Length: 80
Image 1 (cartoon, rainbow, N blue to C red):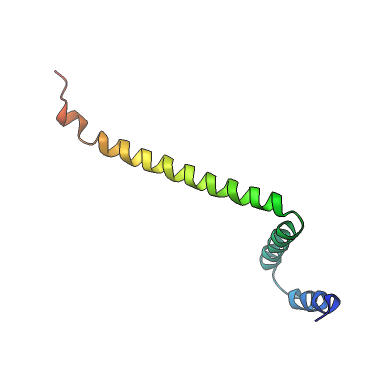
Image 2 (tube, rainbow, N blue to C red):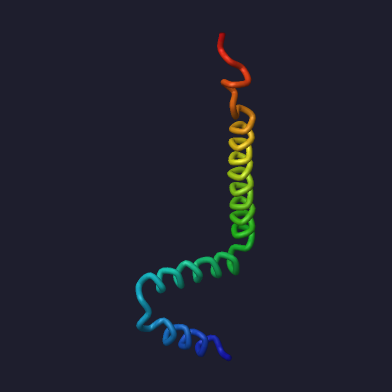
């Protein structure tokens, strides 16, 4: 299929879709364009997102650990 045929197929396919769906399609288009035309920036963004997710999980794990560590603290170490 030629480029113009794909473009026409996409244009016809989005006609009549609700705004929320069009916004989702626009997000996907920007994602694909960045991945295609700026692969280095795309890879850096992915790595940054993965690192952020890992750091958030570490923070949650640390909070759970601290909560367990100090569970029943007043009973184990009563004030005199």
